[in-house]
Image 1 (cartoon, rainbow over the protein chains, first blue to last red):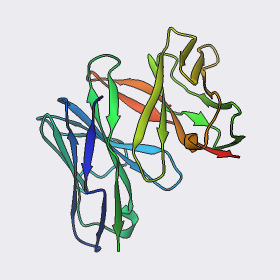
Image 2 (image 1 turned 90 degrees about the vertical axis):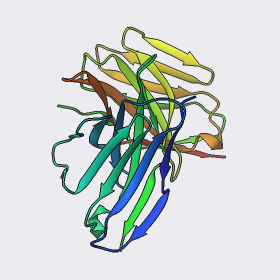
Image 3 (image 1 turned 60 degrees about the vertical axis):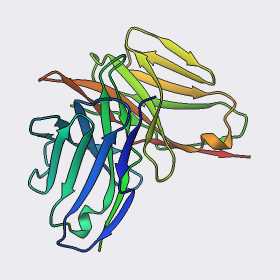
Image 4 (image 1 turned 45 degrees about the horizontal axis):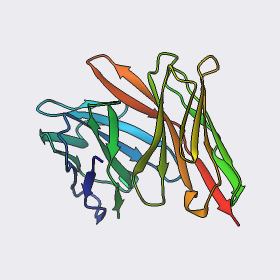
Length: 116
Length: 114
């Protein structure tokens, strides 16, 4: 089946620094990738939709200047958390859309970000 | 608006059946999904059902869909300790511009005890 990887799986950074998270589709081309944020014991909140070669579409309430998304190729999307603060600490999950069949999303394993 | 609701917790005895329920909002949703999340991991697609179906069975999993009531359920037969996880119901929403996004429920934490 389709596999999506994320890197890193866990990162700890200091307040004020920026962190980049990568999402890769390993065996299929993904024209669309999605970035989610999950708080402890809560559901996934869609942050933005990333389309290859164009600007990301952000959900209401998500700061586009803080969460920079780049989808430079059909297999890679990156999320950069800029000037991170402790409240940005969360579990970030990406998914990649496989448009064939039921048009389903395949999810990465997630990245745990801790900002100290 | 977009809202998918699930009960938050379910505890069952090993070997019994588990039934996880979900209600959704968009009557035009074409696909409804069940995902499983184990601790510290991403989401694994368990099964899905197309909106013109009432039931779908896949090994130990049975999905029932009541379109009139916008109610979806997932039944796990012969529940095992390895089934302990969080189960998310999701509906697919069409977005102007041609792509679809998933709206997730809050997740049901299934605990399986001996």
